[in-house]
Image: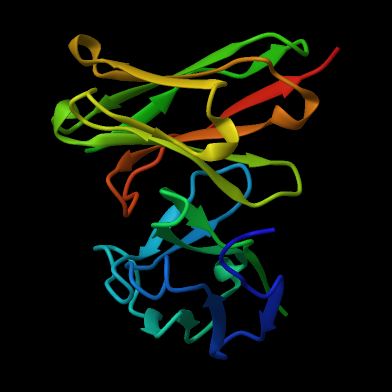
Length: 110
Length: 116
């Protein structure tokens, strides 16, 4: 069971906006920066968002992140078929003295 | 450009050890930490630990303490992760990632299969 809680699945049609949530606690999301990764099995995970809402260069602005209290969210607007992947939130956890990932959300583009 | 290139797939028997390498290029190796993350079949991403850039400190996830060793050879820009006492549950894809968080660059992954 992951320390960070994500919905196991999400879906949307092309062009739609989808949001994926990530719920944690005061030892992780509440006090530490949150990152989001896109993962297609068989490839390397890709950093989408860091420091809650910052995009690395090369990541389209369709991807955005936010955080409020002990919850964070990833929003994907203008959904495209190539966005179909697993999405993970992550943050450092002071209680565990380690980095923790959410359980992952499988995004399906219908 | 920054690249992390990992060693090839491994097949091991239960109880054995495996050592995965991660060769860095395109940046100053000793300026950054190296983290290790794995993904078992049907499971999510799981952080295993990190070795800091000076090789003076390692932090291992509680789950792997006593069984994992992370090292680096600065002279050849290569980091290593050794996992001992393998069980079937260690069958997974293992990734190295440049740190500290966020992990902006990742290796391509190394498949480790534990089979009798």
